Length: 515
Image 1: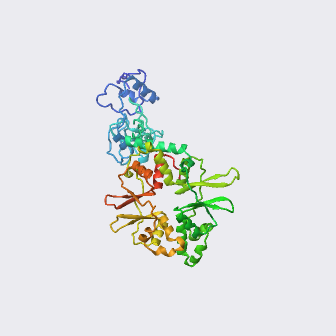
Image 2 (image 1 turned 60 degrees about the vertical axis):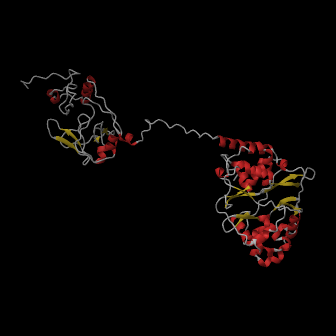
Image 3 (image 1 turned 90 degrees about the vertical axis):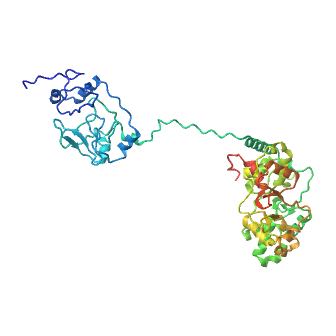
C-alpha cells in the first residue's frame, strides 16, 4: 500500500522475509537485537520456506548456551503431574503447559489472546514434534514421534527454530539410569591374612602335602597282629574273641568266596540289641545267629546298611582319608591282591586315631603352626548333645545312640558337670556270653566293666589351641575330646572325625567330591 514504505530486511539475509503465518515470540530481556524481524516481513505472504528462513537467521546470531536439565527438572517433566499453569519455557515460541489439561499454548498471529492446543496427558508427554511435556528453567522435553497436535484457533506452532534450536531428546532417555557419569567400582581386594591365619594355612597345606606323598602302608607299625573273623562264625563266639584280644573291631572274611566281606564293629552289636528289643520272641535264637546274618538283621530293624569300603595299601594316605570322610567310617581295611593266587587278602586296618597320630608324630614342625583356638575354628559339636546320668539304663543310652546316630553319650550329674562318657564299645561286655539282661542295668555298673587298659576320657576348653590337641594325640590314646568350661560343665564334643575333616577341608574351595 502507498504511504507505507517497505521496511529493511532483517540481518543475516537481505532477501529473506518471514511469512505471515509464523508467530514469532518476543525475545527475552537481554537478547534484544539478536534477531530483528519487521512487521512487514511477518505479514509478507510470499515466503514459503519457513525453516530455511529461520535457520538463516539463527546462523547469523550466536545462540544462547543451553544448560543440561537438572534431576528435579527431569522428575517434573516425566513423573510429577499436575503442575502450575503457564510456567515460562525456554523453548522459543512455546509457553509453558498446564498439567491439569496437558495443553500447549501459543500466541495466535495478529492477536493477543493465546490459542489452545488440547491434548491428553499421554499426548502431552509423547505427542508430535512441538508438543512440550513439563516446564521449568531448563530445556523442555520435545516429543520425537513427529506428529503435530491439532489447534483450535490458529495454525500449529513448532518449537524448532526461531533463533534457538533446542536439543531433541527422547523421554525414555531420562527414564534410564545414568551410569555414564559414574566411575566404575574398583574390584574388591581380598582382605590380607593375619600372621596367625597365614601360619594356620601354611601348616594345614604342609600336612596335606605330607598325606599325598605317604601311603596307607606307611601308617602300619613295624610289628602288628591282625585278627580276621570268618562270616560263618556265631555272633556269640565273635564277641568272646574280641574281648579276649582287647579289640573292638575286626575284618570279616567270606571263606566260600575267598573275598573280603566287611568289618565287624560295635555298631553291629547295637543292631543286635535293637533286634532283641523289637523281636523279643527271637531272643532264644540270638545265640544261633552267625556273622553272615548281620545284613539280615539290618534289614529287619530298618537300619542303614554299612558300606563296605577298603583301600589298597599302596594308595596315598590322602585317598584313605577322603574315603573315610565320604563314608563316615572311623576305620578302613587295607585290601591287597595276592600275586600268586590272584585273590584278595586283608593286610590290616587303619583308624582315624592312627592317621592323626601318624600326622602328629611326623609333622610336629607343621602342627606347631596350628595356633588358632577351638573357638576360633569352630571345631566340634555344641548343640543338641544327648546326655545321660549314672542312673540311666544301658538300654536307654543305646536308644539315644541310635536316635541321634552317635557313638558316645556324655554322663553328667545334676549340675551338668561331666562325670564320664558311655561309648558304643561299652555295650560289648554287657552282651558277652549272651547276657542281654545286663542291658537293664545302670550306666554306672556298665562302666565298671571296662578293662584296665581303657584310656578314660580327655577334656579340653574352647580356648585350647589345635596344636595342643595334636600334642595330646601324639602322647595319648585319644578317641574324642569333651569340651568343658572352668566348672567342668559340658560345652561340646570334638570327635576325631571333626579334627580330620578340618585338617583336610579347611580353606578348600571345592569340596563337592568329598560329600
